[in-house]
Amino acid sequence: MTTGDPRGDAPSGVSVVTALTVGAVLFAALAILGLGMLSYFADIDIIAVSALGQWPGIAGMFVAVAVFTGMLWPVLRVPHPLYPPVALVAVVTGLAHLAAVWLSALVAGSGLAPASAAVSQLVLRGPSAVLLLAAAVAAWIAVALRRTRARPPHWPWERAADEE
Image 1 (spheres, one colour):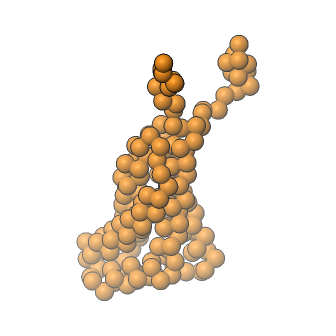
Image 2: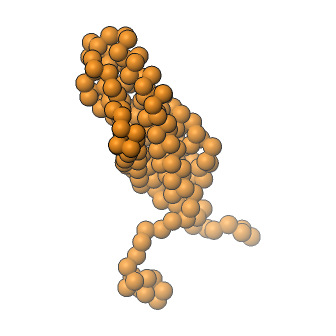
């Protein structure tokens, strides 16, 4: 006599791909919103180094989203993911952003001092904290989507057909 469900385990929430997509889009949106609000309310430029253009910041964000997605993928593949790896995802994403800004500034030919100045501004003025917080919130929500038994929404007339 078995006590388990013969059809297998209950679904653990939304699919990995859906949770990963929601997490990545949410991270990018929260990061852009947070950086924009920081720039507006603190009246600062995110990267205020005259020798640099916009490309190090753009490259940094692309790398940050890619690293966030790559770090979150193995966390979400577990049938019942845990929340503590969210901190690691956020920290590695923030460090990857700093490394990408620094390397892209060097590749652009600005030199070691401007590249280092840009990274120090990101850390000291708060943009890195904004990215860290955005990554933590987005990863936590993605994990929560996998952990809960969330189902796709249905229109009221679809629910009536399910009850019959």
